[in-house]
Image 1 (cartoon, helix red, strand yellow):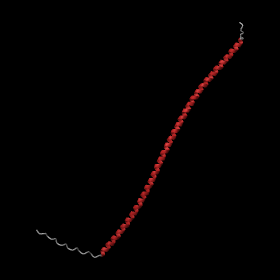
Image 2 (tube, rainbow, N blue to C red):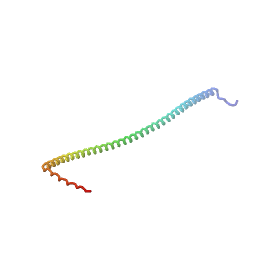
Image 3 (cartoon, rainbow, N blue to C red):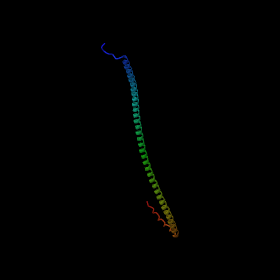
Length: 147
């Protein structure tokens, strides 16, 4: 009985204050839990976006590699085409040259044929002007062998 007790209305005030602090604590706890869930959602989304970014970069890398392979293949085909065009042009030039040589040879043949006909005609004319050749001498009789 020597202790002095605070008045009851002070206890009621402290209890009200305590209730308010507890309510604030629950509210803050709920807010923190909500923020924790939101943070987890954001972290999960961040991981998903990082994975999507890695996948996008891989697809870009694959597409670039495919593009580069197609460029190399196209360049090789282009080089093959150029080589075939050069070969074709070379063959065309060779065929044209053979055609020109053939035409020259054909012309030479016509000239030689005409010359041969002219010489044959001259020969025939000379032969007509010559007297006929003498008859061949009679063949000597064959000697018979005796038994």
